[in-house]
Image (cartoon, rainbow over all chains, first blue to last red; front, side):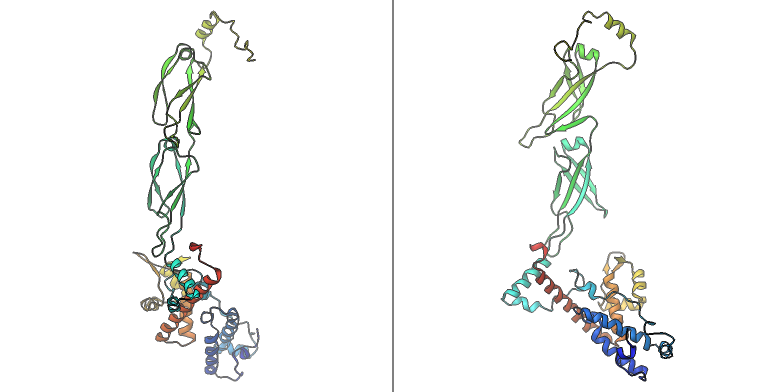
Length: 300
Length: 93
């Protein structure tokens, strides 16, 4: 930093009134907020303000004159200037477009550009807002109405259409951030996360389910209740069913795009009772066809 | 960053009476909700500017009105010019 007297352009003998006058004259010319487009002005202004911080204070000036402090001794704390904020974003309460309003009335190309900008700014659509919504597997098949509470405390009613897949995005028109002028609101984009269900697996429009049955149900056949996304239904297990036997419940799957529904496939699994069962052992040892070998037909 | 009225008074180094007068003059326009005012960093910078004008430059209240009006127009022009040089604003691309 150079000599503060030189910066202010006053002799070392100048009175405090002269110093203040000199400072005001320079500062008015150099203040960054009065020179929004001049980068160099800020640097010069800082020098002038620093010099005045030193010489404008009688005590500091005396200490400087006596050589007790140097010219860096009185730098003012720096703050951000208004110009750093003023142009950056739009729609703030201080924005004023009257400085070129008259240009927009003329017919030349420049005026047209200005007008187009102005319209776009005045009528800008709001931003889209993104959300995630976890739903149950059952709701993803049958559809549902969900209430989504937003971070700001407001709520959105979301209609989950039947047959929705994990990761699918629902667009709620006009439920996003507000726009300006006639721009309207943006959209709310809701990514749906389908929570897995331990029972069901989805394959396209069909769903499948593994259903345990007892040995006697497998051998003798029975009617049992089977869960489906729309509630349990009764299904007939025919005599002589086996592990791997697959039954089809028509129309109990997810809705098809082209209409109708997929199916639910129920794969049976024969389960023996837990633990040793002397009665069963006794019965099987007396079973007439104990010589039956399921590996005979090449299965082994 | 937004701040409460009390935080703003500290950051801008203002007293309550001065702030009320500046708001009355529309030199400062805080965001008002139903219950309170909130201020931004931009408001702080604008307050510093007004203080420089009044304190260091000896501008009186009528002068502040004139200067702020011209400076706001200047920034409006600068923004329009910046958008024109950058091309069209996002939403019309």
